[in-house]
Length: 144
Image 1 (cartoon, rainbow, N blue to C red):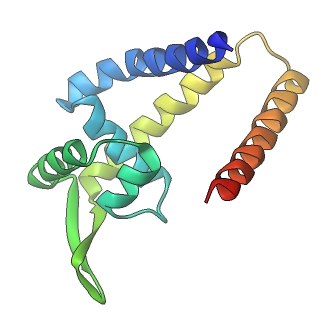
Image 2 (tube, rainbow, N blue to C red; image 1 turned 135 degrees about the vertical axis):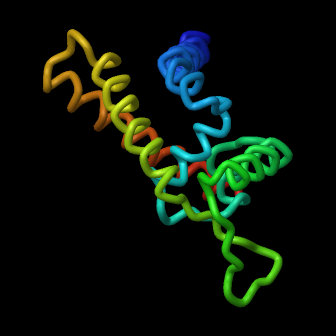
């Protein structure tokens, strides 16, 4: 199973390499870009704790990068009704243009991942990944 560790590491490294020119152009660290893309791709998640929990980015890094994104006009904070300790993170118009470019970059990346595969191979791969995700959910539910 070492190949699975190597596989996920290579995907992360390749994705970072593909993102690097855009991050440099925008003067955004990869983690800040990842936070914007997470918020842009997952509108149901809106808090720093969501980013920590779902994306597994350390809380102190999320805090630092969110603060920078707020200062640079990419995010605004709004208090969560009923819980004055929490704030929602909302993407600004400035962030939306970055997110749009990031989504195109992500789509191109996934197309490159599936280069030299046909529709059937993609279908089987995605169906297998969905089944594995269901199995992971079941394992995590049992572990609670």
